[in-house]
Length: 344
Image (cartoon, rainbow, N blue to C red):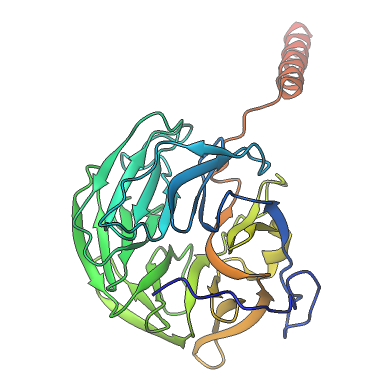
C-alpha cells in the first residue's frame, strides 16, 4: 500500500514560524543530510542512532551528531522477493530487553512479519519474533509496566501483539486496519488512564486506546493517513542537553529534528503526523467540550515517517574528561570542608 509518490509541496510552516491557534508552529532542521537511500525508520540506541531506508534491507548507523554514516549489522533476509519497510526501535533496558547502557536494536520486517534482534554494536543478530500476522508496522516498548514491560508490535492487518523478552507473541487487540503509530500515555489523557497504550490506524484514521486486558476505546478523532503517534514527554527539555528533542525520517530526503523547546506547550499530549498532507497535529483533551480535539502545529518538508522523542530520561551520556575533573575537584572541596568542620 506504500509508498505514495511524494508530490511537490510548499514547505509552509516547516521552516518558518506560523500561528496555528494557540502556539507557534514547530520548525525543523536537517539532522542527517543523507542516509544512503530513502529514510523510513530512526531510533536512538544510547551511543548512536540506527535507521532504515525504504526498499533496502541494510540498516545504517550515525553518531549522536547525525554524522559518520555507516552500515549497521548484516542485511536482513529478503522474504519472497520483497523487502518493504523496516521499522527500527531500541530497547529501554527493561523487561529483559538488553541493558540501559548497551541497548539492543529491534528491526521489524514488513514483508516477512518478523522482528530481528541486533546487539548494540551490530556484531550479532538473530530472528527474534515470528508469526506476527499482517506485516510488522510499528514497535514500542512499555516503559511503565502496565503491559509487563513487553514489546508491543502493530501490523498491517490491525493486529496488536504483546511480545515478551523471549520473543513469544500474544495477540492483545485488533484495531480493524493497518496500524502503525503507537505510544503510551505518560499521564491521564482526558478520560484515558495514565500509562495506557494508544494506537493510530493508517487504514481507518482512528485513534484507539487499548487497556492491558485488550479492551478498546475509540478516542473519536479521525485523520486521513496518520503515520506516527507519540506522546510528548513530561520532562522534555528539562536537562538542557541539546540532544533532547524530536527526530523523524523525512521521506525520501533526510532525517530532521525539532528542538525540545518547540514542544514545551504540548507536554503530556499527543502528536500525530499525516503522510498525505505532511502535517503534524497536536492532540489534546478539551475539558469544556468533554472530548479530544486537535490543531495543526507544523508541516514536514516532505513525507513524514517514523519519529521519536529523546529526553534526559533515556539519554546515557558519557561524561567528558573535563566533567570528571570538575566532579573530583568538587568532591575534594567537600572533603576539605568536612575536615575543617570536624577539627573546629
